[in-house]
Image (cartoon, rainbow, N blue to C red; front, side, top):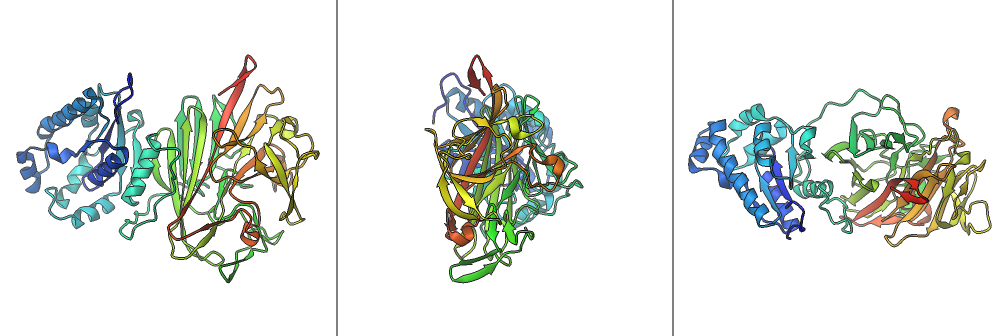
Length: 510
């Protein structure tokens, strides 16, 4: 694929210590992209190879002609306008500077793994000139890429194809129309060492930045804690030293909303989920809100996190789940993927629970638009009893109007979509001059709108509007409405996002 005219030729430099999988990952990347690639080992002189095979680490003087040869090949590809992939350990900052300086099209992909994991890989590798005994010298030289190098960092304790999928997405090279569900883990997929955890109530905090946008994702439940544009908060979220309350920003897997009595029947088996909403005798919002999610990949502008949902009472199925958050010029994009890694069919639903704000003390004066033709009626337990048109009712928000004193905890469907297949829920400031669009893309059949009137913290009631992208409505495990059934190896994708906007000269700009 030739580079676009006037643009720097894109090159991917894959770096990391020996044993991190650079050759495998670079080969898979090149295959996916249709680009040529070279491995750094090809540029070593016979003398360098012999020196390393004898157990002697290379010096900076040894590496200088090697780095020069790699750089010359990169320049050759760029001059021919051929995008390409090349690997190089590039352990020291000075080495990377030599390869990156003067080459604006180069993106840095760093494969990160623990010393124990990489040692195990090297000890299992036979016939390679780099012995495991030299690993300590590699880590002694390693200066990990810093933020000003703008690396995409991918954790290697996952199958190579998952590493490649994460890298392509965060490099902005993934086809947005292609399915993005993760691959089922292979039996050879290594297990990561336990990493230190943050002492805060929601664990590690992963910050994303792009232009005036800033978002924060947390380890606990992979939740979205914060999102702002030009210093203006767009979510009624929570602070780093606060626990999550009221579902704020949480991922709802493997079902959103409620399952009545926690009881359902699937493929001939009667199953009972824990009653996580005891006051209503329901199971609510899935099973992954209160477990730590691990970091899979990160860049300045994006992060991918994931976890395994193991078989357990009430849900005897095995799922691999990931969530990717990425800032773009258009706002924040979220992709939630799941794959059935077990041997039996699995019922599945998914949602996410952010609270939007336009800065008003209460949501009463905010202008709400919901492009939906129907709403679900519910009983006293919050379970659907039917569906009715919104036309002629107080639930018709197809045209923007103030929320007023109306208490909403309502699921909508019959979504009107634009040419890109997105339905857009809008919360606007009373002035109509600014606001946030929450768009619902692939995998979203329903949206729940909640004004927070029943929150356990009275001071947080009606301070924000929860707008929840959902693949199915409440009680789908029992009714089958909108339910996804994942065959073994099959996956599901949910896409949604946030777009801040302001009005200038009568036109909304983002």
